[in-house]
Length: 144
Image (cartoon, rainbow, N blue to C red; front, side, top):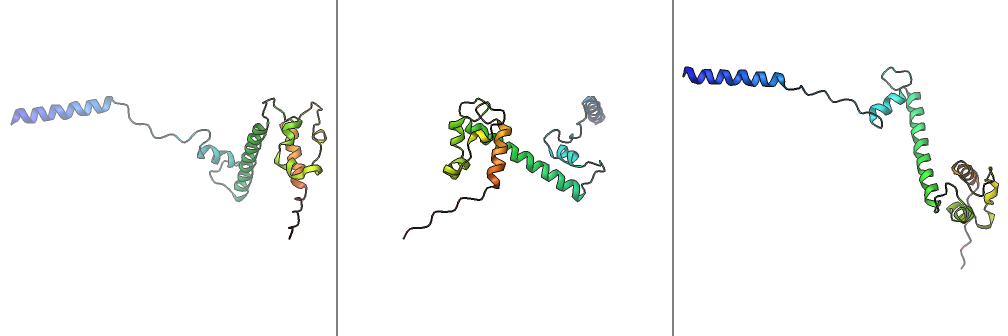
């Protein structure tokens, strides 16, 4: 019996010594760039650990703007079929807003401010902004 207790005691001591030698699990770190903590910290301008209504509104507006720009860049890239970094005349003619406006669509040269024969992204944004301000074309009357 004494031997059994001694083996158990030695086993417990070995397990305790082994556990002390093992690295302790580290607490999980907050999420880094792109995570919710990074977003919260970017929005919390006064660094008080809380978001005021104004901080939330400004942060949300900035996020929406960034998402909108991302989508516009993707759309621009999709129409830049030759991957030149600009929309040339044929590519411009394939834009939905240009097709929808038809003959009333502005000439691409009206937005080609650097006169390089195509719309670069900033010029494309100017075109999109101008087109968004135009009233939608009237629907053709239904024929009986």
